[in-house]
Image (cartoon, rainbow, N blue to C red; front, side):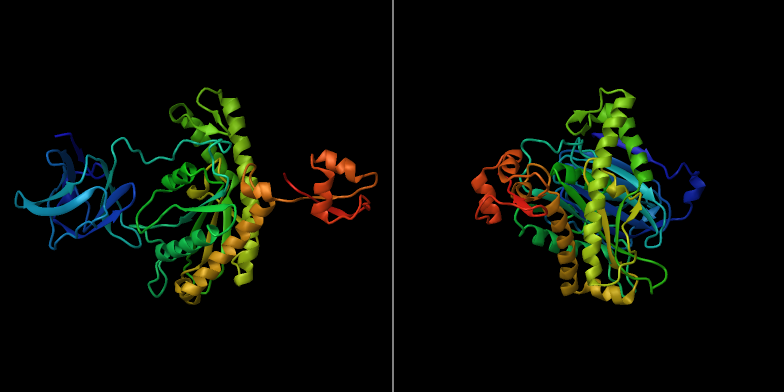
Length: 431
């Protein structure tokens, strides 16, 4: 026996659990680095978890509960679960046994009813010593970084979190994943750009983990794709968000509070050995640069979304979304449409429209990075700088200033001689 602990629901008295609870459904969501099991229950439950070995298995005892139907089995690709079985215990309790493929760590918690679900008991399975926290900050100046511009594309929601649901049953988590896949495909066809898909299937992924995965890939941008909803079905249009100043401030406080334990990096500088003032200044510099880049990307993306039709807001919006709170990665969140609007729900489900959305997002991203490619990337190397001739300039002086040869400068601008005029725009090639 490796571990045993008891979880009581919000320290309620035993009388609060009076009456047998029914397990209405069991849902299993397999992700690349964790598996989430969700029990839909008719009321609050008291439960006990026990990890056993030889063979590896997780035993869940649920007090005063019954399972009226068979439990669905995990998919073959599940990294952690092999089989699930259940049986009555002590005539009134329920025992559920998860046959495991490997040693694991686990945690459980209880969720209150919301608009989509009733009471739920949630059990997460993951690798030993694996913590569900964001990966420590990685310097963007890492010499081993890819020479492509890396864009992390995140499909909102997933697994037990379907997001909003349209009037005809279209789920946000499904359309965001398809749009994200289309966008990744389009980005990966562009020179000097590479996309990574943060959520690759229908499974739960915490917001901190989404940021952590972007950081693992040393992303230059994080874009989260969603579909908005509102109680009035007439509301429509897309929106683009960046992190609000208030959200940035609260996130900075969190990073500073945890720096001693996290050994976080900002621009390659560890915060754990810095005093409060210096650590705060370093973090503020990183956040300011990220927010400025976020604004630039968001403006370009919103401009191209307007070409598809009405946008909900004319300007980029700001909010404290947790998924935008990485202090070192420029981040935007796109509400592609209102899934609560019947017309836009129909569009979001349409494959051709999904492709149009992805192309509009690509156009905005490509336009921004063409003008503001990160230093050291292929796009930066391919970028052509512009110089406007002013009184007193000579071609030889401009060539010397930008460290290019006279012949290269002539060839890049198709000049037949060295004569230039005030107001003329020269292309300055990057060698």
